[in-house]
Image (cartoon, rainbow, N blue to C red; front, side, top):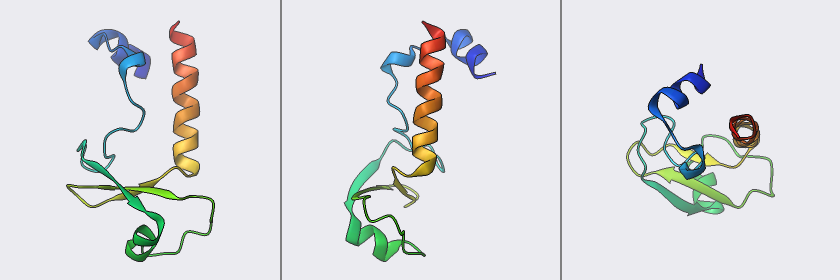
Length: 85
């Protein structure tokens, strides 16, 4: 399905920045925030102390970090780009 959409709209996958938009509201206004600020705002304490960077959507205030979901998406994106070549 994704491949058909990319081909139909002639999307150049090399020009896209992976996860550069908010998943919740589609805004491109993602702001870098520090770990301490992010943990204060999150409803839980993220246990992986290696994560230092968090991003907050300037529109809907959703907070993101490069965790498990990000790594899976990055892997799928890389595989899709390999298939396209």
